[in-house]
Image 1 (cartoon, rainbow, N blue to C red):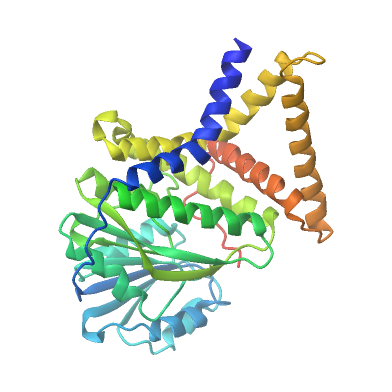
Image 2 (cartoon, one colour):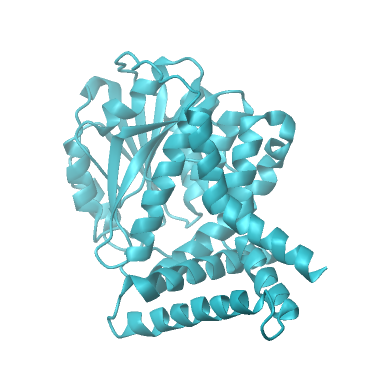
Length: 376
C-alpha cells in the first residue's frame, strides 16, 4: 500500500509540472497557427480597484496617460475600496482624461468593487488591471485584437516580472508563461493574468461576495461556462515588480491559494470530463498543481515507510532529505543575503507549496477574508 501511494504521489507531481506541458507541446504540433486577427477598436472600459496605493498610484496614472487608444472609445473607472491614506486625494487631483472615480467609504474587498465598476461600465470590452501593473503603450490595442474572433470571450495578456532578487518566482513565472501559450494554442486558458486581461462585458457575471475569491480565475471560468474561449495574447504586455524575497511572496501565495480554492467550488461543474479540453486543462494545470503539497507529504511518508538500508527506496529517501536540507539552507541564506540558485530554488518550491497547503486550510476554515492588506 505504501508503494502504491508513493507512485501515485510521484506521478501527480511529475505530471502537473512536466507531463502536462509535454502533452501540450505534442498537441500543439497538430494545431494550425491561427491567422492574425483584424485590428479592432471596440469601446473599452478599464476598471481598477485600489486600496491604500499612495506609493504607486501616480506611476500607474502616468502609465494610463501613455496608453495608445482612441480617447473617445476609452473610459477608466477607478474604485477606492475604503482607502485610508492619500490615494483618493491623488486620484482626485490627477486630471486623468476619461477617468471616473468611485469612492467607497467601507472596506469590502476587490470583488465588491469590481462588481460595482463593471455595473457602471459602458464599453463593449472590460479590461481588468492592478495598481502595480504597468502597460506598454500598445498593450491595450493588442489585448482587444483577439476579440475579432467571435468565439473568444476573454483575453489574457502577458505579465513580465521584474524580479531582481527572487530567482524562484522569476523562473516559475517564465515557466507559467510557456504553459499559458501552449494552452491557448491547443484550446483555451483556464485562468488569466490578473494585471492584464479583458472580457466581453456581456459575459460578465457578478463575483460572489460571501468569501474571498481570485477574480482572474473566476471571471475567465465564467466565460468558459458560457461556451467561449479564453485566448492568450503575448503582445499585450504588462510589467510588475515581484516580491524580492520568498518570505514576502509566501504571504501573497497563501492568500491567492485560499482564493483559488474558494473559487473552485463555484465552477466545479467544469471539472466534468465531458467538458473536453477545459476539464483536462483545469485538472492538469490547476487542481492537481494545487494538491501537490499533499502529494509531497504522502511521498515523503511513503518513502520513509518503504526505506530499508541498501534497499531500492534508500537513495530516494536520501535525495528527499537532501532536497529539504537545501531548502532549509535557502531559508537561512535569504536572511543573510545569500541567494545561490542551488538553495533558493528548493526553498522556493517548498515554501510555495507550503503556502498552497496553508491556503487550502484557510479556505476550508473560511478564515481568508475578502479584504486584505496591501503590501507594496
